[in-house]
Image 1 (spheres, rainbow, N blue to C red):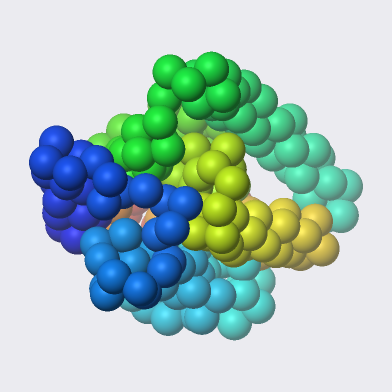
Image 2: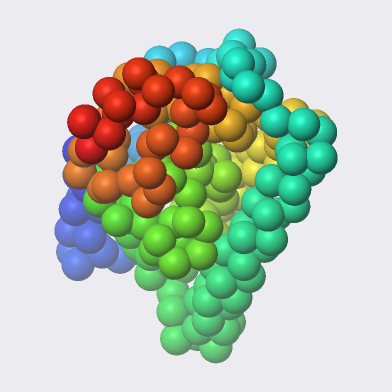
Length: 248
C-alpha cells in the first residue's frame, strides 16, 4: 500500500508539473535515460511476476491457484456439489466482468473522443492500482454487492487485479501499455483455466488452507467477514464450533 500510494503521489506531481514526461507512447525508450515511467512499468510487471512464484509475501488468496497450497478438507464435497459451487461462482464473476468492463467502456469513449489523454488514463490506472488494495484491506464493492464471498482469502477473482488496473492502458497503442496488458491478460487466463480444472483449490469447503480456523493472515480484522465462520467447520466438530463462536 505504501509504495502504491507513493507511486500515485509522484505521478500526480509529474502530471501537474510536466505532463510530457508521462507520454506512454515512448515510455520504454531509454534514449533520454531512466524515467519515472520505467519505474511504474517495473512496479506493475514485478507485482505480476510475483503472482506466478508461490511465496509468502503474497496473500494465500492469490496463491490458492497452486497445487502446493491445496490441503484437502476432511469432509469433502461431492462432484455434484463442487459443480454447483462452480456454477454459482461463474454466475457472480460474470456480473463483475460485465460491470467492470462495461463501466470502463466510458474511458474508451472519452479517450477516442479526445476528452481524456493517455496521461489521464495512466493516472486512472494508478488510482485503480491503489484502489485494489483498498478493496483488500478496507472495503470491496464487488465482494459486498455481487460476489458475497466471506473474505479476500476466498475471493474468486483475486488475481483479476492486474487486468483491472491495466484496463485503462488497453486503449493506448504502445508497447509500454500493451506489454503490461498482455502480462495481465495471461495471469487472468491462467487463473480462470486453473479454476476450471481444479475448482477444489479455490473453495474453502474443499481446501483446509482457506478456512478461517487455519488462516494466518487475519485481513478481516479491518474489513469484516461476510459469512459466519461455522459454515465452514466440519459437521459434528462441536468443540471447534464453540471456540469459534466465542471468538466471534
